[in-house]
Amino acid sequence: MRFISTRSTDGSSFSASEAILKGLAPDGGLFIPDSIPHLDSVDLSKGSWWAMYEALKPYFEGDELESDLEDICRNAFSFPVPFHENGGKDYLELYYGPTAAFKDFGARFLAFSMEKLLEKRGENLTILVATSGDTGGAVASAFHNRAHLSVKVLFPEGRVAERQRRQLTGWDGNVESYEVSGSFDDCQRMVKEAFMDSSLSGLSSANSINLGRLLPQMAYYVYASSMYLAKYGKKPVFIIPSGNAGNATGAYWAKAMGAPIDSIVLAANANRPITDYLETGHYEPRPSVKTLANAMDVGAPSNIERLFAMFPDYDAFRANVSAYSVSDDEILRTIKEVYDESGYIICPHTACGERVRRAVVSAGNSVVVSTAHPAKFNEIVEPLIGSAVPIPESLYEIMQRPSKAKRISADYHNLF
Ligand SMILES: *Cc1c(COP(=O)(O)O)cnc(C)c1O
Image 1 (tube, rainbow, N blue to C red):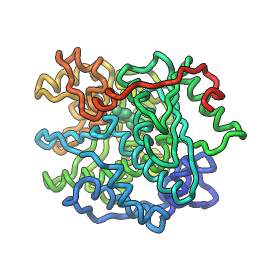
Image 2: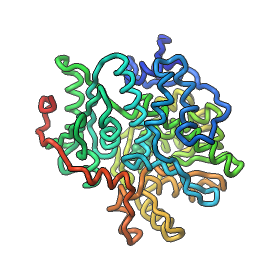
Image 3: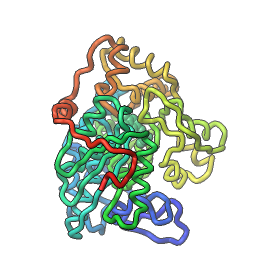
C-alpha cells in the first residue's frame, strides 16, 4: 500500500509510516492513498476497536507498523463509539475519548503510531502545537506519557474558555503548556519560526492534515455504517458537521472502500467555502468568520485538496458532495428544539448537522455525527435548556488535575 501527494506529478510514493512521520508531503501537498483498497465487511462481534483495526489493516499492508497495528488500535480506540438511537434518525456519539470530541480518535492513533516508529528508530521528537482551543487539548492528552515524545502546547493568554484551558494545562511529565501573552496568530508564528530555526532539531507537528489523524476517521465510518446496516437493514446517510472537512474526508474514503454508506452530507456553519463552490462552481477560500460552532470556523478547509483529488471536476464533485450552511440563530434554535422534544442535549456543532437533517434530508435512514460532548460548550447550551449539562467522566478527570502553564512573551526562544 502506497501513498502519494495531492500535488504529485513525479509519481513518488510513500509508506503509511513515512507519511505519518512527515505530516506534509515534500511538495507541500497532502498524503492520499494511491488507490483506495476494497473491504468486504468487518467483524462487529469483537467491539468497535477491532472493526476499526480491520478497516485500517489494508492501509498498512507491507508497512513497518503492520505487526503493531492491532496493539495501536486497541490502545488508541479504548473508549466506546455508541449510537444514540432515534428511530433510525440516529446520532453517532464520537465524544467518549479523553477530551470529549472526535479529534481524540486521530490524535491518539497518531500518538501511539509515532511512539512505535520512534522506538524502532531510537529517536525522540518534540511536538509543537499552537491552539485556539480544542486541538491542543486532544494532542496534549493523546501524547501525555508516550515514550520518545514530548509536547509543547502554546495558547493565547485570556482567550480560551476555562474548560478548554483545563484541558491544555492539566498535564505534567512530557507535556508542557505555554500561556503566550499574544494572540493565536502569535502562537502560530512562534511555531513556524521554531520550525525554520536550523539550530533546533527533532521538532514535529501533529496537524489535523496528518494521515495518521485522517485514517482513524475513515475507520469509524466503516464501523458505524456496518453497525447501522446490521441494525436497520439499510445504509445510512451521514450528516457531518464540517470545518476543515477532515472528518468528512474520512467518510468519503470509507464509502470508496465499499462501506455501506448511502450518501454523505456536510453541515457547515456560516463559513461557506464548500457550499458556495457547490452553488457557483467557483472555489474561493476566504477569511473565517466567528460562529457558535467555533471548531468549524474555517474559511479555507485544508482537506479540500483531498476532496478535489477524489472528485477532480465540478460535475464529479457535485455528484458526490453536498453541503449546507447553518446560521448561529439556527444553531441555538436547534439545540433548544431537540431538547424540548426529547431531552437529548447536543453541542453547537452537532446542532448544525441536526438542522441540515431537518431542512434537507428526507430519508428516514440518517445519522448525524455528534462531534463533541455538549458539556464542552456549557456556556452556550445551558441557558437554552435551562439546566446544567452533566460532565462526562473523562472531562471531569482532566478538570481535577492541577493546572500548570508557563507564562511567556510571544518569542519562540522562550520555549527552549
Ligand atoms: C474539529 C471539529 C469539527 C470540524 O471537523 P473537520 O474535520 O475540521 O471538518 C467539528 N466539530 C468539532 C466539535 C470539532 O472539534
